[in-house]
Picture (tube, rainbow, N blue to C red):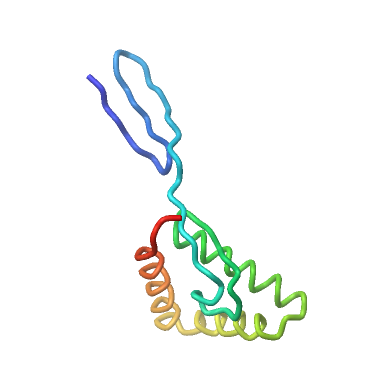
Length: 105
């Protein structure tokens, strides 16, 4: 008897008294800074919407720290969204939905 379980991107197959771990490839998708409300077309790649959103947050912070006014405005807008939880969650749900509809890389 073979039983297969999946945890994240790891697959475990059990049978005949042994367990084998098979690492699967992660499905990646791409969203740009602009698709996430920023001013440029830098591509962020991730397996989940949360990974891409975190990459965008790091990007906005880095560019703002380097004096980029357009990215600084986008970073302030992002912070402002989270001051109003309903508005912030609306943006978050839309970003996750948009990510879900993207084709795989």
